Each structure stands twice: as C-alpha cells, then as structure tokens.
Length: 325
Image (cartoon, rainbow, N blue to C red; front, side, top):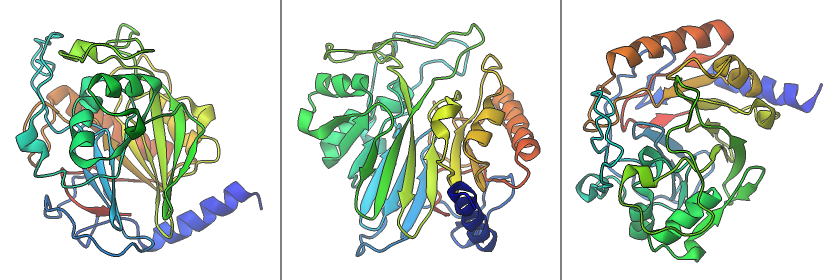
C-alpha cells in the first residue's frame, strides 16, 4: 500500500473514533460550536505528547497551545475599523495596535507564523513579538517589516516554502501559497519589501508580500494546515494530508476551482474549518459577526465542501473556544 494511502487510512480511522471536541462537546456539524468560550490562558504544564488546543481569534488568526509552548498564526486582535465592511474603505487608516485587547489574551507565545503581511494578518505581530519574545516566521517581506518595527534580526526567520522546522514535540512545514484575487483579478496592496522600509504608519504600508501556508504536526496529536488567503498552489500540497484544514473563505469567484483544488491537494481532510468569514472590524465577541453577503458565501462554502469532500466534517468555529482535534 502506498505510504500516502496508509497515512490517510490511519488518519481516517482515528478521526472516526474522536473527531472534534470543544469543551467536551462533539462538534461534527456545520454550525457554530456551542461550547463555552474560554479566554483564560491555559496553565503551563509539563510537555506531553498530544496536549494541544486551538483557539480561533477571528480572520485567519489562531492560538495553539502545545504542552507548555504557544504557537500563534496571523494573530490580529486589534480589529481596527478601516471602513471595509461599510463600503467606505480608507487605505490611509492608521495602524493602531490595541494593547488593551491584546495583553489579556497574549500572556505568552513561543512562535508566530505569518501567512502574509496585510494589516489584518501582520499588524499586531511586532508588538506581540516584543511582548513575548516569540520568534517570527514569515516571508522576506515579513522579515524586513519586522526590522522596520525594531525587532532584532535574531528574532526573525525568513522562510519561503519547503522548510520543515523541528520544535521537538511538534514540527511546522512551510508551504508556498498564493493570495486570493478580488473581482478585478487584483490583489490589495501588492508588492514585497526587499529591504527595511520606514516603520509602517497606515494599512497601505503593509503589502501582501507573498503568501505562505503552514502544516503543524504534533507528536501523538493532530496535523493541521493553516491558510491565510483563498487561493492555492495545489502542487505544493502533495503528501501533506492533514487531519484538519483551516480554510479561508473565498470572497470572489475569480480564482477558479479554489475549493476543489485545495481539498484534493490536501487529500480531503477529515475536518474542514472555515476561517476569514467574519467581520474582523468588530469586537471579538460571540457569535462571530458575519456580513450578509459573507453569510451567503459561508453557506455556499459549507455546501461545496460537503459536495466535494463528503467524508469531511465542517466545523464553523466561534471565537476563543478551545478545540481539540
């Protein structure tokens, strides 16, 4: 039996026994889970295999606690108002880091993974890195922007895709990816930074800067793939076969066959978690606010996943709820 098929068989067999839990509640249906949200920081414990929880912070942001380590993906908690959801988008909106929102939630972090450097993914990262001492992984653009914010080069790691980073009880594989296109087939704030710029002041000062995905593998625990935008270079996904995929919702149809290519490339994950479906310019309170047009897109996404990958379960997350895969 080919190794990929054997891995998928073992993965599916394990997932059949215990799919997803959130505070002890099974969550295998395509509705928001009803577990009580938890914003309290987990108590540090001795490192043990499989001890991992995932909390969604809106947009494409996640906190994963693995034993006594904390990994963050695209942590964007300030959720500043740019007018994006009201039809009055202001590209000169000032970058205002909400420390009063961040500090109670980010008591610690050892690793920060950045998929790309738009403001709703990167804006809070420099402050969080300075606060916690976490090492930041991202594109060369993320590296140069980190320097612009005064982070030391020793705290920044530039990656491009293909790297497998070993952290002992878990590893992270970096995957080259693509950013989604708007209805005009364009990317907002395109561009890269090949040298440190002046410290960014507005959201337009944070370009896309190329896009990455990340596969987290936990010893004795789940493998989870994180996306930050709704496009895919599916040939880069061969062999990843994650248990769980955090999948950014598509907001335009200009990227052809997005979900079919993504789900096939990931070997049809047992659990699919929609992200980047919420109005991320509102307070981080449940239920997650969803614009009417995005609600339609979310429902269409759920239906499409069920059609394309009927063996997958869809979990629509709520903010700050601890999920165990």
